[in-house]
Image 1 (cartoon, rainbow, N blue to C red):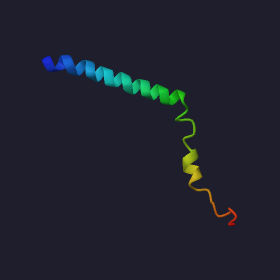
Image 2: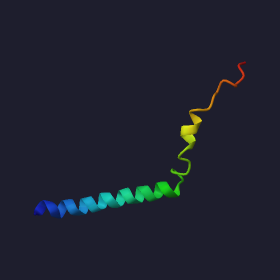
Image 3: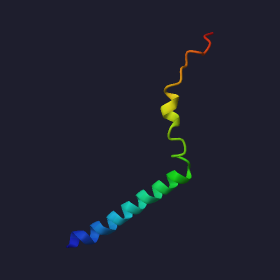
Length: 51
């Protein structure tokens, strides 16, 4: 029972930290362009001129 007194606040704190990190990532634009990297890998870079 004494372990629950410590573990429940720790779990609530870690959950709150995770929620704050997720909201920060949403507001900073981390999830704006989900398809950009998938399409970028298919682009052909052979049209660059060699010097």
